[in-house]
Image 1: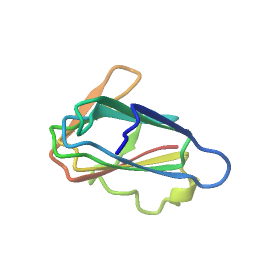
Image 2: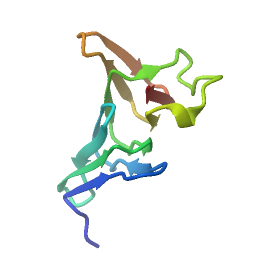
Image 3: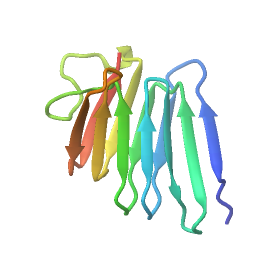
Length: 126
């Protein structure tokens, strides 16, 4: 079995969906309105990084470690679910966060909001 140290994927035309999964160790996910990356140490104790750029929709699942996600300037509804009455196809980027122990929502203005121990969080950029 071979695991790549880095994988970079860039979306093209159409509605592109990426699936990203963490490792059994501690992983960090960083997301902005154009790119999502997840990195950590794989099962062979080697560093890895997966990058998804310009995708319309990204589904992420944390591994078994104390995983953290940092999202910048994303909208997160108070119930952490997809917004009602909004056509999801009209959003510029959707990010589904599943099983992350810690999620930190940052704004370019310097504000930070912590979302901890919530199994599923829907975030998006318009």
